[in-house]
Image (cartoon, rainbow, N blue to C red; front, top):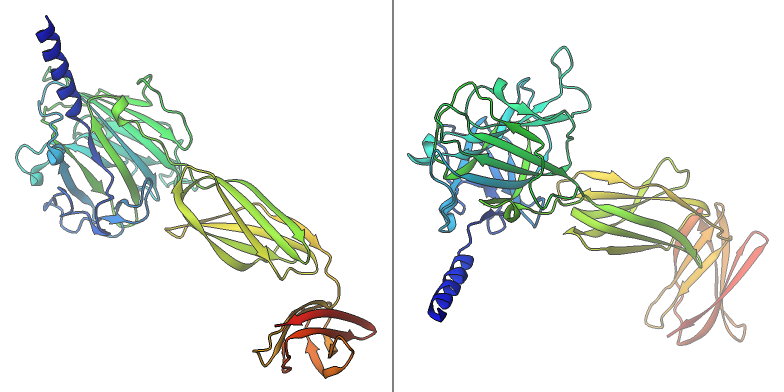
Length: 445
């Protein structure tokens, strides 16, 4: 009995070690054509099909981009055995799950929709693939068959390679530039005259995924014709050069639990505040999560309408952690300052935050002085409420004048270089604008 128990335990451990999950996250590839990287193989029936690896990703740092230029047709395919994994080959039995992250930047104008993802029969060669479990996307149309301005679309599925009119679609509830997780379940049917069953579960940003299958978002079993094929890999298909889809983090398994993955959230700004500190304005903001966040632009306006960029603050790419940011505006405007953030993705897409405002009660001739005995100039920052001439006098603490000169000030902040060299010690700079006199003590080292 003990030997039997030990033998069973060894078998269980060995079985657990052998993973049956196929994964593709594109992380180890270089930016450029997908074909030839890893085990991805070209489909020569459609020369010019453009599917590339790009540094803009949905999870990690890289992903596959479909149609960044090129012709329509079946793109590259990859077999599931790229890591010694044998998932599903039998044409008439078995179940397989596939999941991937996807973002649609554009959709085809075909009234019946077009497919972009399929399971592949590689029994002859990659150049003779026969797609199964095809996943379609179709734009919402007006009665005149023109895509509606909102750009919303439906996602559909079909088990085999029959007419697009047999595809079962979701409602037109999906939107461009949002992240989705699609889980596909493909069930083989042993009856040759009965269609295989394909089901889709579609999750959006922040939506909790089921730990068990539950009810599918869409299911298709009603094809007009049926043929049985092996499934040994997967592939992509492009529509035309104006459409663009990003796919990332593909998983294939015979278990629902092994293909679940988190749907990345966009950059989520949880707070954005501004406050006056001395003669500066301090900006603070926090993100709860980030996805493809290249940087923030800090914008300022004096009227809340026309904004100018002050600086750029690097983002944290893709992360699910809280991140705190800050920036000090050392030269705010006198009166109300309006601030806004522009969050910019790596692909150049951007989004504006709310506008926050703060009043900076700056006084005439707000002075800052920097001097060094090693420098031939004294550096002065002065805020002027109006354009005009000012007189500057520099004295030591005993009252002995080192220099006096007139300077021209513009309205707002002025940066001056006064041609006065000092020795180490304490000095006083006196600025006279009209009837207003301001003095500032400073140290030269």
